[in-house]
Image (tube, rainbow, N blue to C red):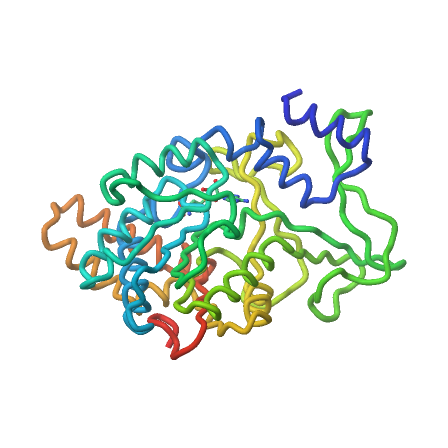
Length: 360
Ligand code: SAH
């Protein structure tokens, strides 16, 4: 049994079955055995690949998006550029390179990275050493410690890593899905809590008996905090992730290992665990704080409106035939409706003003 499985088994023996959120938090963030803590999970040798790792075009377009939003907000200087869950730092490095083309923008930026993984913080330090000279970026465990002030925030595939709770409707009422350990088989398994009267959060209407609803209190908390900050100090946030535009029943907890789906309760700490992002819930939380939400729009539409095809064509003019084919294949992967183009969505949160680029 792995160190984390043994820790979970003991915790369940002491406390009883864990919520799915507690299981996810342990599996991803346990300070010694957590999935993100000791490894770089990205890339072909890892478990999954993300948009910034597919092509530099993704980060460049987001860097320009930030520059235009900053100009529209009256060019606040300084402005905190915050990334949640920066992975290898690739998106930030590409965004900063593109930002240098917007007069006055680059020198106004103070870079803050919210990252729990020591291994990935090290990757980010290397990736950004040249782009963010001394004293370099500031790292944070959460948004709370980022200094107040005008905020540009980006988050790609961050919210899908935040823990969800799952509730199942039964004849007797709403039960929470919990993770138990079965001594007979030595495996973790789902069980149901005793029924409670209602869901702890607003859920989708008309869930049939047997239906499962997921809620992500941590995601709503971060969205509310972003909303409060952009209302208080201005500018905006861009959230890109895979998920659904409107609340709906269904369970989406999934594990991925070596680019393949894996059973979510097998090998805790050894596989990436995510859940689809409920954009309606994020927008509701940011709106509660007084912010204006734009979208979500499909990633393919968003990137095309920002000029993805034009950028791909520009890169191809100085490329070899082989490189040009790679650029075209990356463009299709990012924007194609059968690839990341419609499953992934973009949501913008601003304090005031007209819709930002890509959302009009
Ligand atoms: N944005 C990157 C990486 C996505 S993977 C990209 O697109 O390539 C998820 C990232 O979020 C990783 O950097 C991971 O370590 C970080 N992360 C996950 N849960 C977190 C949490 N609770 N707090 C801070 N960072 C977290």
